Image (cartoon, rainbow, N blue to C red; front, side, top):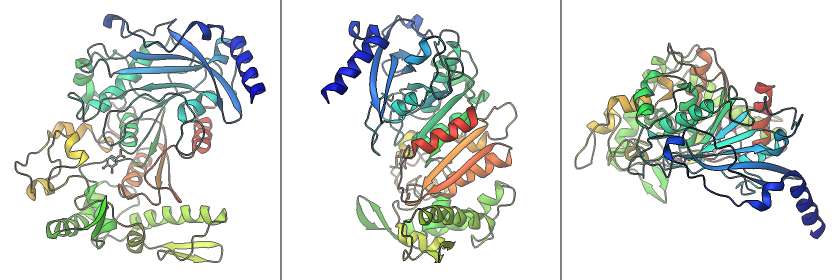
Length: 471
Ligand code: DHB
């Protein structure tokens, strides 16, 4: 251990002489400078990522909106591998010019999201996405993003901020010591996955312009190259329907303690389930439809995603027998039954899952404590039911922008959803993927065996995908 520490120290001093002159110093410029990458305010660190030592420079807390209503919050961190500061330095085949820029967001629950800081604090063990990304040769840029609990953080603040951070990067393209601003990749899970998909789907859409102007975002393009999306809580104004398409008939829900859905909730479940096929068919997903009973090629597609996940697990030697919803014949998973899946997975949320009848869900709060669907508004049990602004609902939904004229969506998408995830229906990320494919984009979608509502659990595979689209 001592020897290891000594080696690390020697290496750090050799690679990074500024280390001992600096601590992490928040960058506190005059706000008029907030659109500029500060050249010398970095610190240098060396960390162990897996078996590898990675040395990198960090710029901390750079403001990225000139008129942010939450100026202490709207700051981003830039991390660049030290190798890119040395002539001919490469990592994993990338150099200072070609390194992709990985831009993970830390949003969860539509709450404010903090910047990622490279550390060995991945809940799945080892390096987090920022540290592992640096070790893999990416430049990592992570903005803090406003969320619903800040005075100025309700919809659409989160997407305005993510876009402003992309614009800041483009604005500083020539000052950025490394990283290819044409290879920006977003990443997030859950509400952060919704955010990642929104950023990917809405590049340069004019609808966000007034909001971006208001916060003093740089005047630049905000389209990105690729989006990594885990279990996105998205398509909010329609997501109640596919939730019931899967969970209708399971009346016990598990938000904290197990409880029974009351009569209003059960009626909502029946009505929303019934409404799903016509919504799905209205999307005109090429080759995917449902009949009025909720059966058809779209259902086959969803069951197929579960079958593929189970097959992968079975191939790795995991036991997928006896769960009551999969058909397994020898070494082959041959079928999945959605109704039985719901019994196995159990229901997490009462109906409606997102636009709550009592107007108290995370999503109601995100929309200023208002409803955002006609069903919940009509059947509201809140004291003073109110409907959110239609324009805000519209610009929070990535589906509205895919294939739209004048919008530059990300070319590449990787969408993942845990088989045990009951925070939203698998139909939601599947619809996102099919809509993207229909518009000609490359969308890789899969369900992942053994995974609940989560993300960034498969960094080696995520990075393999990034390399496959960047190299
Ligand atoms: C998140 C989870 C939810 O179930 C939800 O409704 C909104 C957000 C999250 O983990 O981000």
